[in-house]
Length: 322
Length: 290
Image 1 (cartoon, chains in turn purple, orange):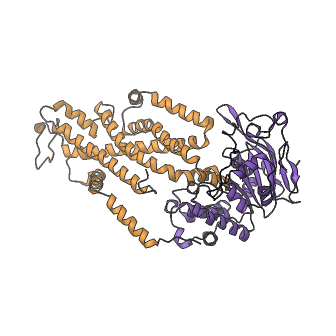
Image 2: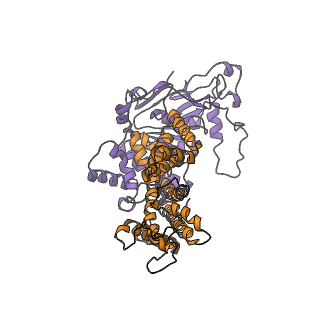
Image 3: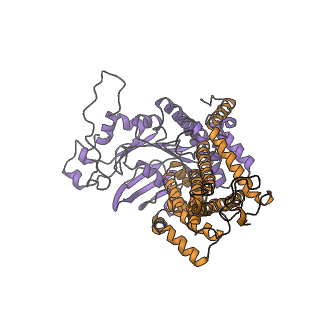
């Protein structure tokens, strides 16, 4: 069963499975995830570290080959593409990383780094390239005359993330995957970068897949939120609705774990105990059952499918909260 | 929206100050010595020097004089002239052999570190074999088979340097290839060649260059050792190593015959190391981060 968000989604992921071998064993990073993202929408993807959300983002871009499943971008199956066709399609999808400093080559000048996508995609005229680069650098709030000739180490993390956003925007893409774009930044800079992303989204008409482990950040930017646990989707739904009435116990626990800025509020004790199980040997049935307060025998035997629990809201749970 | 507050003039001024401070007296002495050695080696033919191979049996082991500035050796040949012509050999071998090593070893190391898999196992395995092979035996075998010549000597030393350069290049490529900027280039659709040349090479080049200068110093010493053992350049051509070897015979009567070329070699090797260190510190984009 698949959640339908629009008749013509920009990105449609169908039953995507990504596995990789570590020391002779198989890590089940993504196990049958299906998603849709409508044009102009921001989908937030949240989950604990190691739940496969970054792997999912990279598998969408074909940076990691999927074992099975499809990634349909604007109707074209990216998993079936190779070579030049894939390279052309990649121009329409861009990626922003968690560590802004590591995602810039320390030995190349900012002007060259931001112009690189243009060079690769065959914009041969240097004057034209410079024009585009200057425009996009101004758009992200950097002075092109001042930053163009400098090296990445001369900038702060927030400024580097602006440069990364500029590089992602320079080809005028339709879709950007933001892989934890603010988790490596100071709290004071986060809001700036999030506002910049919102601004750029409106200005360039972007669709975003926003990956994060911080629910508060996701809540503020997303139209819809998908919650991932150990390679599977737990719950998908409109942001407001999901936060107001979560259907999956895991979502509920994550929301409870958001700190409340009030010293009189005692933290609740229902935070899941222990580490999540290893993705090398995930639990049978529902993968959350080992930490779930509502788990019973059915959760051990039967893998819960995503099903509608409220209009637009889907949960993969045998005992949903609503 | 926040923009950069620093003005460019401030930054440039600060950088000039930093750079000026780091280059100490030692660096300039090293540069001065290198310029001197290279100049006399290159223009040796134009200098008013006696022939380095003309023997004067009446003036064997002559002391310093106006005619022979550094005296003569055991066969009455002018020591200064032999030292200068010897510098040519030492520098040619010392520079050319690491060039062979850095080119082949650097390329193999980068390819191995980037592509991984079977190719890497093959490269690392064959380099281990080369490392395990005793270098002196290899030198002996090649000189016995192909004869003693500067070209053969350079090739042997060059090939022996490949594994070390391969390891340096592979180690830096391994850490760099996992960094996000390489993944970003892949996501942009850059070809492997482009990623290797534009993203990885500029970063790998720096440790390779520092290691190259060290390699030059080591090669000069090794060439000296081989010549000392009689495996280096064939006589009567002089090299610093063979001069030390010949001076050994008269250590008790004229120790300067061994010490003068030894000092020249010591200073040159030291100068290469000093310059290598300073270059590395200067070209590191993160000041003092290493």
